[in-house]
Length: 100
Length: 209
Image 1 (tube, one colour):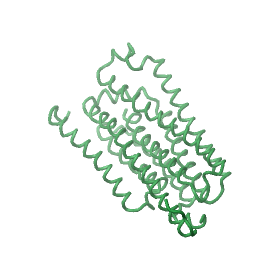
Image 2 (cartoon, one colour):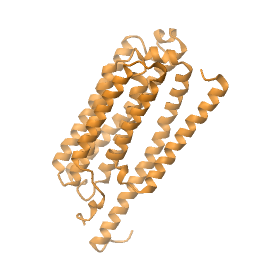
Image 3 (cartoon, chains in turn cyan, yellow):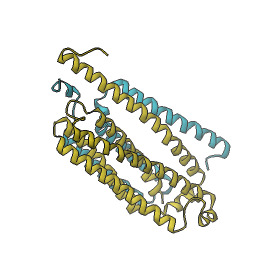
Image 4 (cartoon, chains in turn green, blue):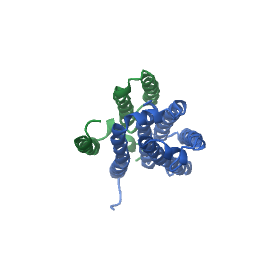
């Protein structure tokens, strides 16, 4: 019975260490980019790097890569709902107060 | 529930339980996502309205502490992931050590937060403080969001630490083992989720000067 159980795929320790080093490198990158003082556009690389880091955590540490498609779709729906809420709110505030 | 007669049936039942337990955890994490999402929504709307105030307020935050805490939390996620892999390989002793390291790193994160908040409070910046009330509306909103979002995130870290502590005892007692590790796996999912929230909080509060 115990031999059968780990039929669920396993990520190797080496992969975990590589992902960890990538995450630390991306943290250094986001701090360095912030020092360039891109002012209004600083948000774009900041969010892009954060999303890359979140992607690494979700796929490798949270094993989404190995999960069935149902779970992937569920996550997509949750993220889509959040994006929609944010976009609709912005549509409202822009309409009322302008683009600021 | 039917009794499992053959090892094959037992293994199948185990895999089904494993999959459903994990899906339940993911659904809980979606509710957490929308919970934090609401606060990120407030942040983005107010930031677009008070862009200049948000930029100057962020100067009050210490990038060094923010970066250190990011590294601490990312490392703790790695040790958490490794502790699960170790249990699956049958090495419970080493798994317990990695769970312990994860707890220590979580406590280090909270310790840093304590020092940070302490510095702000001593500088007279805390909700409803006379110093903060005199600042502009944008600054008041920035610090309110800062305290609420990092506070609730910190609370999640604290809950995570308590849960990992429970898992550590389960692993030591043999309740979590090579053949049944879904409790630890789900704890890991929660811990990684809390890590992801910080991955976004860090640039949004510390790196917008």
